Each structure stands twice: as structure tokens, then as C-alpha cells.
Amino acid sequence: MHQDVQDLRNFYYRSTLGRAVQATLQGRLREMWPEAKGQTVAGFGFAVPVLRPYLSDARRVIALMPAQQGVMAWPPGQPNVSALIEETAWPVETGHIDRLIVLHGLETSENPSLVMEECWRALGPGGRGIFIVPNRAGIWSRSDRTPFGFGRPYTLGQLESQLRRHSFAIEQHVSVLYQAPSARRFWLKAGPLMERVGRRIPTILAGGVFVIEVSKRVNNRKGTPVRRDPVRALGVLEGLTEPVAKPI
Image (tube, rainbow, N blue to C red; front, side, top):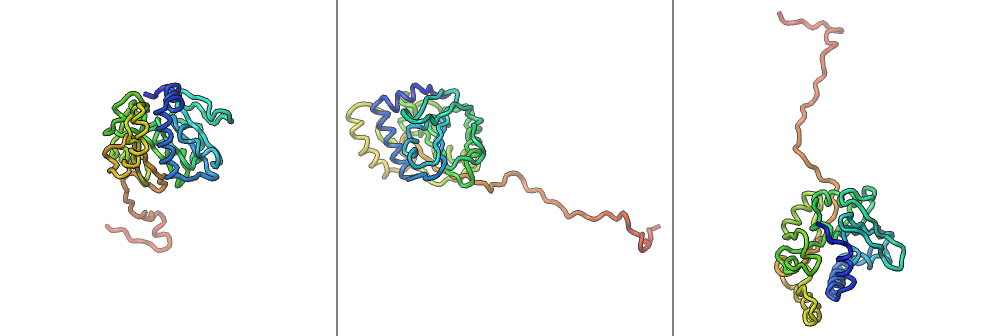
């Protein structure tokens, strides 16, 4: 079940912990995608906290917010780029998106498989996507004080298997949010240090959120091969030029 857009906005823009999470996610995404010059960048779910760095150089930025969640105007003080959509029928032409970020859109959906199909359809050939989902083994998925405590958390294997079934190729994955999901001053100050230490820990262990980059595969063949025998010519006109004796 999707969260309300007001709750998401309050967390990321009106809480100290939310702003710290936003900075951590933005920093890691900028490492993976340093720039998006001349490209169309879209976010599905509530991806606006990590879309802002691409407003300056991308050809176009689109924030797609599902109807079950609600929509808000974004970015403030600039022309609005957000739209209220049906989560499994985006108002986007097939192959129109170059880069796609999914944040708070997959784990809260009642139709994650259909959402992935729509992601694949909207991405152009060779397009890249980033899925940000809560880690089932992390402490962030066990606390309902943050948006990552809602919906269906994933293990890394579960998410990668599902992405491959929908014709995505896994490019890389990282784990973030090693700090505690707490607004106490001590944990907020220790957050940057814990993130640096967390990079030395195996991905599957302590990180609260998985960040997985994928690319769109367009040459995927599905189904069972069918062997076809060569077609034999029919002997309809046999015997017209040279009589053919029929066996008695």
C-alpha cells in the first residue's frame, strides 16, 4: 500500500533525519550517474528527493507519482514537472525515458510485476534504471518511523531475480543507510562516519536500503523453440510434361 504524499514530503523536507537520508541517497546516485546531459530522466513513486541534482543538465525531468499515493507540485519555485498517474499505465511514450529512478514505488505497490513491465516499456533501448528498496535484513525496514518501514522489503536475491525475469540486466548494486533510523543528535552526527564504514561491509549485511542499477535488454527471447520441417512442394502438376506411371 502506497504512503500518502504528505507523509513522504514531511519526512524528506521537514525532518532532520529525512534530510540526512536525502543527502545520503543523492550522494550515492551522483557517484553512479554523475550527469545526465541531454537525457530524459524520470522518477516513479516519490523520487523527487533524488531528482533535483539532474534538473540543471538533463534535457527533461519527470516526476511520476501514483494515484494511490497522491501528487505534489515540484520543484518549488520552478515550473512543475510532477504528474499524477496510474502506476501500471504511465502517460509516457514507449522507449521515451533514458534514465529512471524508482523510490518508494516498488515495495509499496500491489502490482510490482506490472510496475516493472511499465518501467521496461518506458525505458529506451540501452536505458538505465535505479531501483531503491528497503533491505529485508536491515533495521530500516523494521521501523515505521521512516518510509522504508512500509511495504514489502526485499532481499538482494529476490529483487535481482525479479528484475531479470522482466528483461533487465543487473549492472551493479550497493547498500546504503548504515546509520540508525533515529533522529537523535548522536546518531545523526555519527551518520556520515557509519556510511563510510558501511562501504567496507558486505552489501547483504547491515545496509538499510539496496540501490540496484539495471539496463534494459531488448534482445531477450522467451518461449520454447519450435522446430519447423522444410516445406515440400506439392506435386499437383506432375505428369503434364512427362507421364508418370502409377503403381498398380
